[in-house]
Amino acid sequence: MRLVLSFVLIFTLAGCHRATPQRAEGIDPTFEGSEQEKRTMAVEAALIAANPGLALRHDRELTIFHKGEAVTTYMNDPKGCQRYFLTGVMKLRGKDGALYPVAGVTCHFANSENTYLVLPNSDKYIVREEASASPDGRVLASGFDRADLTQGSLALADWPHIRDVVIFPAHCTGMVWQDATHFTATCWHNEGPNSSNPYDSFAYYFKADIGKDGFGKWQMQATQWVDRDSLTPRNLNKPLYRFTAAPPPEPHFDKST
Image (cartoon, rainbow, N blue to C red; front, side, top):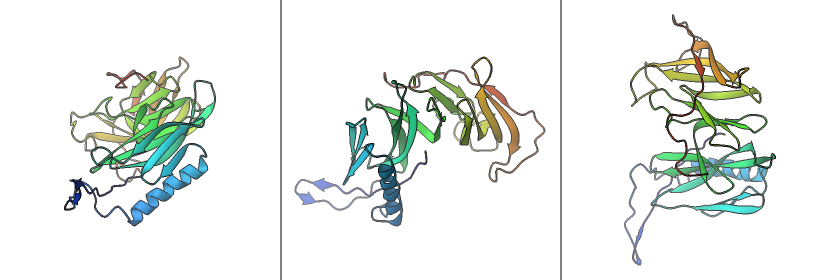
């Protein structure tokens, strides 16, 4: 799922009089009406057109549907999310065994954003960076930095039993699935204690094969070291990583789902 970054300027009203326009810290006042906004809205419009019945845009309201019924409506809020956009759609397996489209919504506030998948009961499944679903829609792979702030992480959730989650201590992007239980990716693992900036000299980048072994456990095997910036092959005098996924060290959800 590709994330689209965008920002919007918020103006406030005091009583019946228009207040002097205030720039909220971190908000880009040039976004609204810009070419970037037009591109963002075009991406959303294309996603809505390609997935009939999934989402509806009405001015500054975005409504998400599941099986013809409205799940929730997101309204721009200057005290919360200044702007909502549909930024991706994933095909995942429902409790009835059928594949269904899941909306990925990005909430923009100040100079930050949150992206989450909207579940049929309106709960939010937060994803970080890139998210990717297995061809059969039964596994969702996504970065989840709450799992381990110092090492980066990759979370694998069994859909629709999304509380069944295991993680690797390495963050991955560029995921390409070979089948329902095997994919490749470019990953990084931080061996150092620097929790404030994992993208530094302590982080080692590598190509990896990720898949289930004969015992049903997810394994990550590094196949090649790569340069952090160019991702070209790199020679390192150290053994290639091999990680076994394990349950996260803290709850993956803030409330029951």
